[in-house]
Image 1 (cartoon, rainbow, N blue to C red):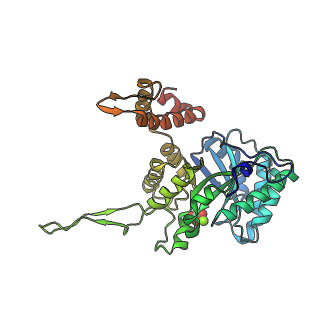
Image 2: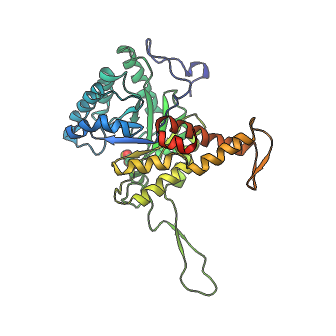
Image 3: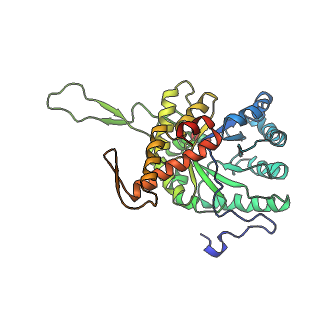
Length: 347
Ligand code: GLV
Ligand code: MG
């Protein structure tokens, strides 16, 4: 790691100063679109009103013969549309692919001032981030980009998970990380063909009772360990953690359950790959009304956050005050974008 005195220095003469704190933004839904498809580009202005972040996907799921068209389509739509307070991100091709370099060079040159975050797939260690960090600084300087473009890493290789904390600490440009369960499953040799979500065989069997009979099987969350490691690495370094793709678009109940586990564990948002997942993500990643109202009561009962009080028979102290503040701060952010939920929260 760099010495602290060097950490926040721009990496190129003329590049914008790195941020010391992430901008405060609501990022419940990172909605993916394939920018090479004209019909999808036409929907972008409308989609931008429905989601918190729109992401032009250039990597996996984009056919090899459409890679350049996807890049050009992203630049076209980024130039044409006013995204308001909706974030504009792209997922570029991997650093070891033939397209990753041109993705970064062309996009920063053409729309560097409109791009908030670049998502880098298959990040293995801090060396990948150092490379992108330096390159972005050079490109920002060359094209007089005014604010630093942030980096979001996908956690989707066994080596990336091993190095998750070093990745989180690798640059002040780091925005956060998403779980990439499909590539990660392959990289780890996990025996599943699913994209995120549970697996019916991953669980525990209840103890054999003395009476014999049917033993209950309890399915477990296959992603619990990785999400927990990602959340700790991100939150201990001032970054944000996100769930990634949920591939079974038909199974909205399982999608909701997976998103909710991630939310409860500390993630602030998720990818949405299909329009049907947008409302699920907004619902799950906005705090529950009952929780917000209770959290507000805790903050009101302990204005300076110290001491102890009882509310409805439940003990509250300095630590529960901090828990309540996480929920109320998030609710306030949601209320700014979402008047209906804001009214339910009483803001
Ligand atoms: C996402 O990119 C994944 O591999 O799950
Ligand atoms: Mg992937």
